[in-house]
Length: 196
Image (cartoon, rainbow, N blue to C red; front, side, top):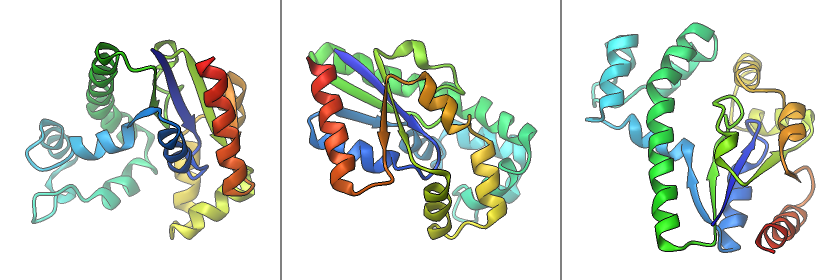
């Protein structure tokens, strides 16, 4: 099985790219979705987060106040490291278990979407790494449409490795400033190359 890692900066088009890879028959697991599952009510990670950060980050419905916690961790490096220490090992365990299942099924090509692939030293797990990237202006525009303030945008971007470094360390780059058709064509070409 060819196992690929898909990474890229925040707001650069990873989810769209993952959708195109899925359409091309590539199995996908997204670590952002795993992170969401891990903080559902009743999950051990949520109890640990409450113990570490306090019950003010848990709503009356027992759910994590994601926005409030994000505001804290993206403005405080120490808090972010504490949160990552709770979540990252659990996330890795889950995607690695899924990869084992795919191997057992004899799956030809699979992909793990990991925004922090290099930051979490996961690169040795993959045969090929694909970086999704766009211009800084394109990234800013997309994050503004999410309703993020300049401070929130700065916090998110500075929590990640610079895009140029991700590009330099990856096997393939999907440039997403153009049309969706161009985005899709680049992905089809990459899938063909990896499969051959």
